[in-house]
View (cartoon, rainbow, N blue to C red):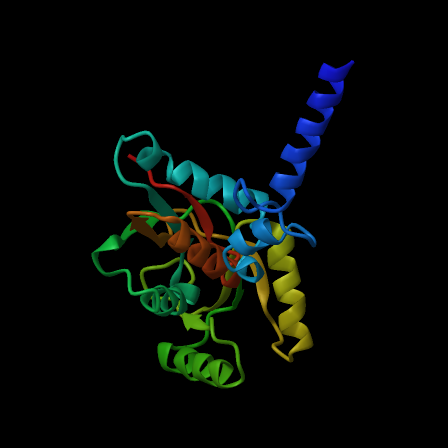
Amino acid sequence: MKRAILLLLLANAVVLAWQQGLFGPGPEAGREPQRLALQIAPEKIRVLHAEQLASLRQAATGKADGGGLGCVAFGDFDEASLGRVQARLAELGLGERLQQKQVEATNGFIVYLPPATSRAEAERLAKELRGRGERDAVVLGPETALANAILLGSFRDEEAAQRHQADLARRGVRGAVLGARPAGAAATRFEIRDLDAALAQQLAEVQREFPQGRLGACGP
């Protein structure tokens, strides 16, 4: 009985000493202040779409497995949006990490104004459209099946092309036609190497600005 009482007193003394900090700092009061203090800029965390996350994770697999540096392909872009994409990627200061190559455009849909009577007339109309805010207006060259047509957008699926066509009509651009992307059309694909977490986030933001482009792992 005396032994039990002594053990109980000893246990109470140990608990009291721990509460007084004799064994080191104890847990702080409040809502988990230590864990919150360890969070790094939680307000900057952004959620990626599942497709973006999967693509970037796949592209970085090589680095994680020791099989080389991560690489992301971003494309494919035709003449209509190429200039704006190039300018946006230049803002990231990628240097030699960024490369671009010519590829054959995949199947898709385009929205365009039918060919003008001459190249000069097409250029005049395209300039007028850009002045009205249609930044993607570009005249197709003589080597294409739609020479002197004015390209207004390129899309992977028909529904997105239809929405763009309707938006153009609401903005006063009349006569826009929806058609299949010409077979064998040229496109530009960007490859970004030496991928890290910060760059992956930046690329996801760029992709949201250019939904017609797709992020994915680089090919062989």
